[in-house]
Image (cartoon, rainbow, N blue to C red; front, side):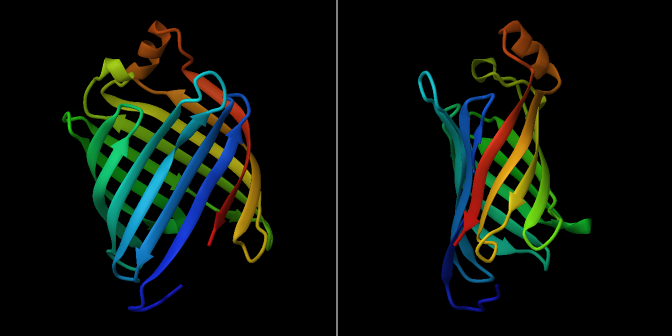
Length: 212
């Protein structure tokens, strides 16, 4: 929606779903305020365990957003990671690659010198006016080992999910069902085996995405 110089706001919840096998709730949400050329964005993503200690792991950022071209936008700001209890400086590029693939790349430089890189891609395959299949994949990499937080240098993790969504109410509300898969990569596989943790997992998922 083009809005010119008049500042507006919006909220988009791209994922609010339950992973049955992992027994956890995943979430990803973004709120923004501004114009077509300048915005402030508040974004958070993570998971919340629904059993035992009910731990919540999240990566949240407050960033300045500005378009680079018709299809690409830039972000820069600060972030906080509850999983390793550390703050970071964040910079990223988000946009639409050829063949309408939604792509995002964000780098986080933590206060301890650790550099994290998150890469993601998503595609919407529309079956009709309401039914949409959404495959997505994400990769996470780190610049150095951090065994206290279960991190190894290089690519650590890949996650993938395929959702079948049904868009309702002018596409503002879309419940979904799907299948998710996560796997450790590189040296992270060996470290997880040493700590008797699983290196691969899959789960049925169900949830909703919406915006207003």
